[in-house]
Image (cartoon, rainbow, N blue to C red; front, side, top):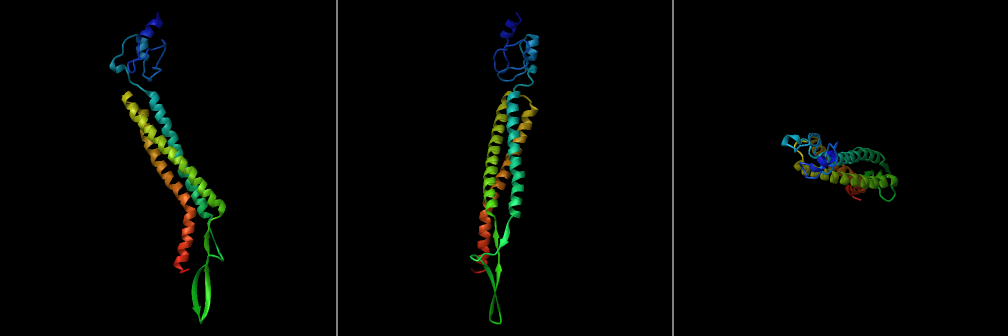
Length: 208
């Protein structure tokens, strides 16, 4: 008899049937149906308070993952960039000297200006980590956008859900973090080229 009563009840939000006598939430949309099952009555407007927690949890999870990816790209990216930058050293090159020419009593004195050198291993690391952090940041930004979309769509099913609001704020912050991560990744990808251009500018300035 109890099962027949339960089967005759339906979710006030999506209209799907309530399957179990001890069911607390609708298995299809997440609506709180505990008071409906216990009271064996049709719902009133004030009965439904938590309409769709599942969508909010999905949005929150995506926002967390997005924030983690963005944060990793920034923190590890900065550490990597500082280490690569500190590895740059100056070395004299017989093929690419920058000279300052001085004439002392008709005698030419050449003062060599050493090149900036970035080791091959660090150059490879700069490209590799740049690509990795750029990928992390792009994925993080996309997840943040998806989290925002889900959060906005879930508003149709939610009267007031703190988790949804937190998810939206966190998703926006994660997108900002991902943008910063993209900038750091771009710096890592460009850095080897920057060293080359720096040496060229010195040579050009010296008139060589």
